[in-house]
Length: 92
Image 1 (cartoon, rainbow, N blue to C red):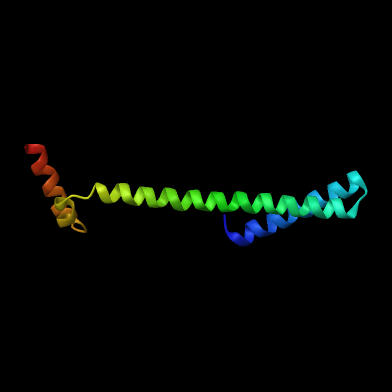
Image 2 (image 1 turned 135 degrees about the vertical axis):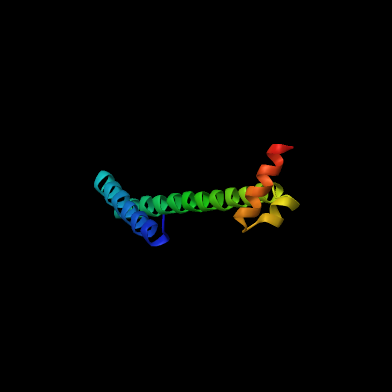
């Protein structure tokens, strides 16, 4: 999700929560406080999601780096060499 899209959704949600709290309690201050709480909770969730995506991406890159062998480095970008290597491996 793009940040501007998230920002519009977060602000809309915060306004809806604030209006709902105001209509429920009759207090503008409680509505504002609940709106701020909703915005903070959503922002913390967004941060956690982005952190998880970055951490998972880094872990995947590290795993792929561990799978690189000297043979695969030599054949990188050359499909004919990779095919020949596969055939040689199959033959034993």
